[in-house]
Length: 260
Image 1 (cartoon, helix red, strand yellow):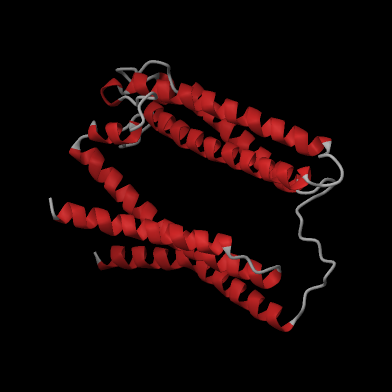
Image 2 (cartoon, rainbow, N blue to C red):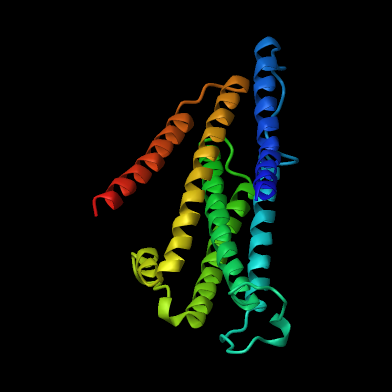
């Protein structure tokens, strides 16, 4: 028993090492930046030919990876839930869910990633277009083409997510997701049994813990950005507000559950 606990503790310490290393790197870099002035002509714009073309290339690659992976996961999932395991979906795993159901769950996760990536692409493309619309020269073809590609990506991910949710509804008609409902997630949660709700509670708490960690890292990154480039207030204030709302919602739900 003690060996298992020690092994788990050792694993957690090893997982924290990259965070400690990243924190030390940030502190060291900030300290060095205070004593050494960076060259004024240093260009931090991620670009090769056009401004920010490298950034949008990475976003487009991320979008393609999520879309292709999502499509593969859907293709590996039979359109109708099988009563008996198919030959292509047999393994020796002791998991309650079948490989087809796990593939469908992976498709749902990837479709969410694709939607987030596409909306981030549109937001960045619109921001770049607006920033260059007031310039003396009209926006170049790269900016216009990038904006069109971002809008097309929205259509692609929405269609793909719709297909993924419809496939999920075929597998689980008793807990189907209603795309026309404004409270789709809330209504879906009510259809779960107690065991599934406990899994959701546990996952939500882990997500809450990770969000607190990432918000702290984001705050430190923005401070580093202010040290290296220019003082920025809005992103730091926005992260602080999101952080407070995140913790406030947690305590509100805790008090509400205690008073029931």
